[in-house]
Length: 335
Ligand code: SAM
Ligand code: SF4
Ligand code: SF4
Image (cartoon, rainbow, N blue to C red; front, side):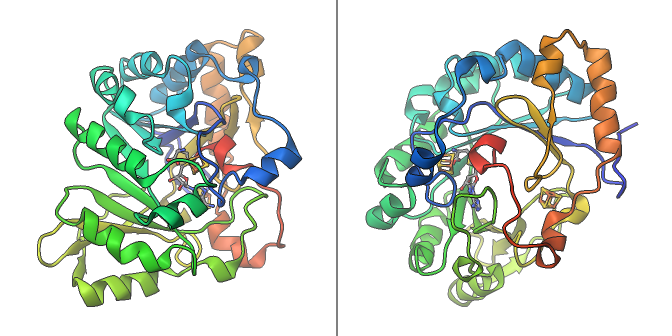
């Protein structure tokens, strides 16, 4: 029997941030100046080890989770990441193992990841315009590096990538049509994400949020779209298909059209803290309990209890909550 929360939402997905470091400094996630002000990344011994991650995934699999997403920070910077992937992909019950990455290191690792059992890759790319990309990535990386990463994933046999694009008004919105045009007919699905108020350092401001409905209209006027009939339950993006058969596009509209109703995602930070919502202020430390000797059966009961008590629906309540609530940073929690 799957474990359900107070709103009868089953526990189905697990997202694990495998480290908090990154080779980019996206302004909406990890702005460079905030890091200088706030100090350092987690030291290695604070990070969950491969064995600790494996134990947790086994526990979640035992509770009915089939889908695991590895994220960060930039997961490909974690030493031994490919080995970690092969350990997780071998766990009974895990049928869908996915990675979210900025793709810069994919040329080095894509083939090995495929062999290790990684099933799917989501690549983040905010613009094909080099100067806009550099502004959003904190003056690091390049469009070419990301496109090379995408090509490496394709060559390694990853089909149907998701391309995550955070849209910010007056920053990259004027480059979205080019990006959509580029990926039409590619087999990959661009997902346009409303800039979210995650973390505390990205200077979130509602004026920077471009509602998905506006973007949908602009894209539909250029390339007519229709909603995809079968929206998978728990999928964060609302999908549309191009009428001319060029593929699909998705919208992740956490600000204007919250989707807490079927949110089935649990999250674990790189230092082993469990959160039941992307916007939680407080989590439950699991790492120290594992290090104190808690076994899989006891951990199963801990997670079951946490999920049973879950009542989160932050996005639905956002407008009624006080501004400037403390949240965990996205690069620590994982997107
Ligand atoms: N470094 C990897 C990457 O960028 O793909 C994985 C981690 S990143 C935190 C995961 C996803 O969160 C990315 O697609 C990123 O664009 C998204 N993200 C980060 N901050 C965001 C924000 N403030 N609003 C919306 N999406 C955000
Ligand atoms: Fe790094 Fe991803 Fe955050 Fe950008 S969104 S700073 S690539 S963790
Ligand atoms: Fe899930 Fe929290 Fe996002 Fe709602 S706000 S969809 S509960 S992660």
